[in-house]
Image (tube, rainbow, N blue to C red; front, side, top):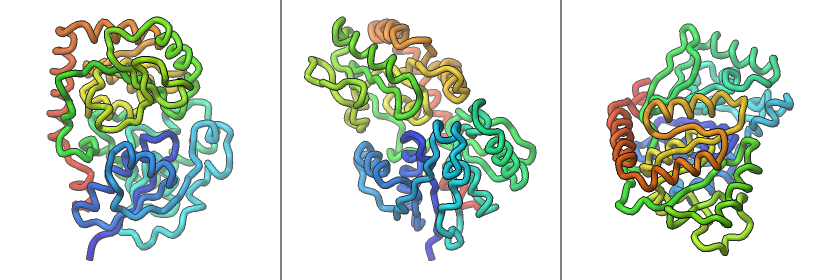
Length: 337
């Protein structure tokens, strides 16, 4: 009989849902009965971007967990797990960035490169204390990805570095003409106004040396301007993207590694996850951190016109791909349990 696994996605943004979607597809292909717990509209959006039809079961579950709700201390967010159905029928439960599942399944596996109570300073002490206590008491394994973990070590907790989940067999979408720019600020964070202003400036001043600019929907109301296109985050779109100006969530970083695009990070203050991710991008030679989108644009233009810079980036990116291939996959870890 096939083993059963529940994958619970944090609904904040799309990156967590995307990761559970990809893991679900990987596990189904190897004979697992997979149920993903996530909002159906986000699953549909991710599926369209990936260009694949889901084969896992879907439980249309919204944990209603997002940063504003967490900061407000809403009960439905702090105790989201109370709305879950029974998880007793599953051999394994994996929860992405949501440790509260340990109150229901003490044997659950956690997933993520960070934990909310460690990266956000302005959240209720009751949430921080409960999350820390659950992890300390149950000492779950935590799956982190691609050498980008910023999780503070907790006594007795094993952080397992895994390969970045990918639908593709190889992280290799590079093509000869990488002459497009992607501008994205994600669905969370409070820097959308800055990005909107930046895009309007680009409309007025031009997009050279890039030939196309893919813009996250919501940042530009009218796409009738020459050279500007609504980003659909598809593999086809990413195949021509050579640079990304955006907020460095790990989902966006994963996309940049997949497609071979240098990341020019711009993000809101007081978000330790974004700060640490940007530092890791710079340390690994995959990008840099900038105070404003205008500063990032200035550096992205230089990069697009400098073949020497591009060669250095390509070398650094291939080194990350090489190291990633040496890491165990999530499939290998869960099948060993």
